[in-house]
Amino acid sequence: MDFKAQFKERLFNTTVADFSEKALELFRFQAENNPVYREFIQHLGTSPNQVTTIEEIPFMPVEFFKGHQIRSGEFQEEVIFTSSGTTGTATSRHFVSDASFYLANTVRIFEHFYGKLDQYVFLCLLPSYLEREGSSLILMAEHFIKESNDPNSGFYLYNHDELADKLGELATSPKKVVLLGVSFALLDFAEAHPQALENTIVMETGGMKGRRKELVRDELHEILKKALQIPAIHSEYGMTELLSQAYSKGNGLFQTPPWMKIMLRDVYDPLRVDNSQRAGAINIIDLANVDSCAFIATQDLGRYVNESEFEVLGRIDHSDIRGCNLLI
Image (cartoon, rainbow, N blue to C red; front, side, top):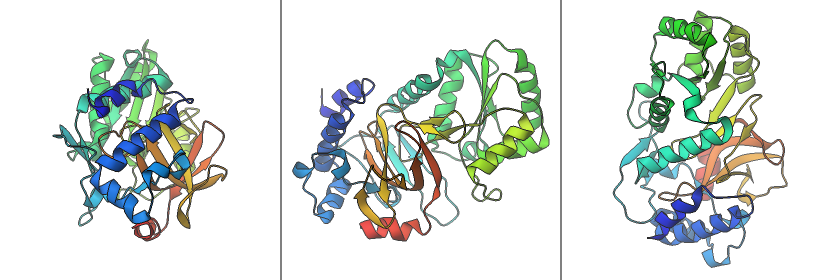
């Protein structure tokens, strides 16, 4: 069995105690076997053998997924996840060798925070994702719908009346209901069908750009909570370039699974990672990214809340210039 297969087998047993060891192990493999990441490290003048802590690992700008094939080792991809983008802009491409591994990972993460999938009904309001190909979120939602093994689970495009009726029917369901939606669609639905949702977890996945006025997360959640008469809005934090997700059960406070870690870098010094700082640009270690790159410098700003929770504060202004070009 090769390194990647062995690493994937051990992934779900990751603990706080052995996270750093596994991260350094994967770093050394990818520093040697990922041509784009290897060249990036060489340009920084970093010697992989001298990296002894996860704080010293170079984080590759997420923008590299737009112009390069990010691969660790040789493989034939089974699926290519693509990001959404406005006309004329480049989109990210994430080459995945095994879709079943991605799906197994998403199930493990959801069940880590929420319990078994078959305890839920999944109603998915994801129009912008359904209308294009290559969405990792749609693949995950399809799998959750299937694994819930409930005839009430399904997708909704713009048929908000039908969705409102279904939510009413499920108010007394023995199963909990998850209404998983992109932000602008949840707002459209809540404005058209304000109601008291019982037995329902409303979970937003982000996504307002180009559809409605941009809102900060707190403002979005307050509108949804008032219209749907629920105490909290849950959130999912993921991206095309990752295979893992973080979840928030309310107040925008996110937690990661054991094999995913958030680290903060200095906005004005993108090579400096300092866990003592309370806010900064978000770097992510996603150990599930065995086939691509597990060490990603994102364009998001974040803040540590405590040892296990973080907030996403927004996007970095002029992030392409400040982050990607400085690192290049």
